[in-house]
Image (cartoon, rainbow, N blue to C red; front, side, top):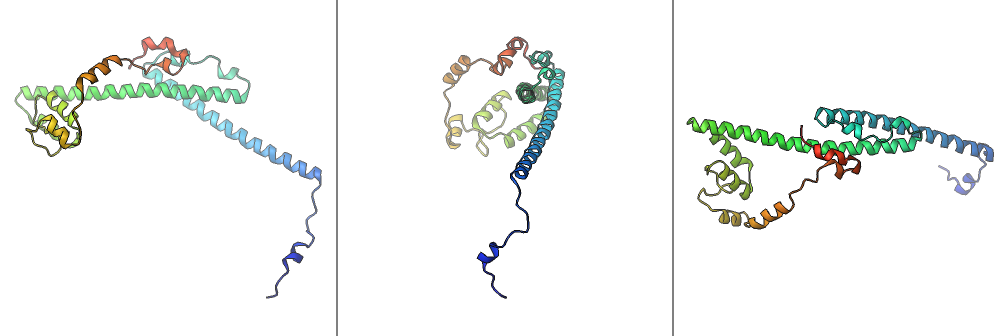
Length: 226
């Protein structure tokens, strides 16, 4: 195969006619227009998705008993904002605020649900115990022994259930005291007095609407889990 001199090959005149400055300028204009169209389409799709999410959050909060939040949130109706970029940023900010409010509501409802389940189960265990049936209590202790690992949590549960046969650490002896169990688990006994003082000093609830936006301050007194 004969070798081709690259210098001679690259020096050959192109079969394509060189573009004029006007043609190059036109090409750049078309490219910019296409890019602008793509960005506009992308922004339109994102705005539609945000509007759907905004409506879903308003409905969810309303059904959860948070009446008025969806009304208080609006300062300027979105349809009154002529500038596309400004309208998009306002919409995005409103969705983010409602997401945060919904997150607060969801965490509180989940916590309340867990407390309700625990209370109902404890009531059932107590009724069965007084009726002379400890089968449910034994099953509960077995579940706790398999699911709960921390010594402090086990100590709390054992005291709550009336000194049930629950060792303070997995695989531990029933007669093992709290300090020995903590040492064996590589932990140490907490300063309960300091914990109580700290809890009393910090007994505030920061999860309120005004913490997300000062405009929501009027909702703080009525903020509750439905």
